[in-house]
Image 1 (tube, helix red, strand yellow):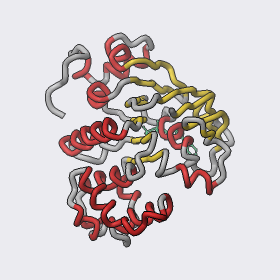
Image 2: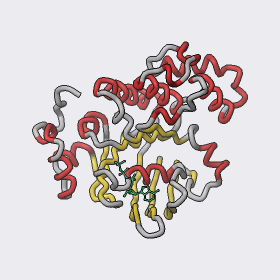
Image 3: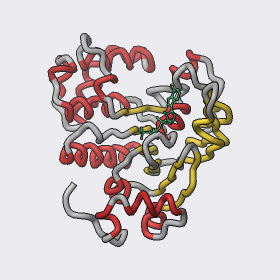
Amino acid sequence: MLQFDEITIRNRSRVLVDRVSMNVLPGEWHALVGQSGSGKSLLSRSAGLLLPPNLSAEGSIRLGDTELTGMNRRSIRQVLGRRLAYIFQDYQAAFAPFRTIGQHFSEAIALHDKEHLKEARTRTAIALESVGLEGSLAGRYPFQLSGGQLQRASIALALLFTPDVLIADEVTTALDSVSGHRVLSLLNRLRLDTGCSILFITHDWRHVRRHTDRIAVMKEGRIVEAGGTHRVLDHPRHDYTRQLIAAAPVLTRLPSGLQEVGG
Ligand SMILES: Nc1ncnc2c1ncn2[C@@H]1O[C@H](COP(=O)(O)OP(=O)(O)OP(=O)(O)O)[C@@H](O)[C@H]1O
């Protein structure tokens, strides 16, 4: 569904992502893990052509049959939000401070589905309700919502057009553990309802074990190990994966079928 082929990302002096290939399958929840600075965010941003201007990317990224690399701004804008959506740790950045939540939804509908603009209000209310928020929140400004509410609103906005792939980059990091857990349960329900795939970047192995189907492990710009979640967690082949798992002590004590308490 989202196929990265031999992606290399560099700045003038350094290769930051080195010939990475990865395939996110339809409907799956695919984790991308690795230490800070290993290149996870750059790789995921390269799909939406969202790299900072001082970096360049080579290789091929396909969403279904559509080649994303080399698209012009106009074409990628049509893909972003409609077929490929992002949610970030910094969910505040998804909203402009002086526009209401509802205005953000109307703008997205105006961009991707103009002929149904008249129904924007109803659609917004339905979308907000699908993530457990009241439709009336559409009239509020971002600063009038809690962190958890705003993250839910950003998920509703990202999933408004049922994208094929949702890229979730450390979406629970800024939330307390209960809100984080709720957000991920919500994502799982929406994934099952809509059939979208999730590329999930995280440092939290509890979430990896609980939710994901497959894992790719990144180290210094390369994927060093990839496979089914239970295989990688219970029988890691690469030393680096073993070290990462050892640094999350609770996981070392649990066979993959069991869930840890808490979190
Ligand atoms: N605009 C940039 N210019 C130069 N180097 C950059 C730029 N953006 C990121 N990097 C470097 O690229 C490497 C990979 O960064 P990236 O943000 O992808 O890491 P990450 O694995 O997502 O880390 P984290 O888990 O902390 O978010 C890091 O060494 C980072 O310093």
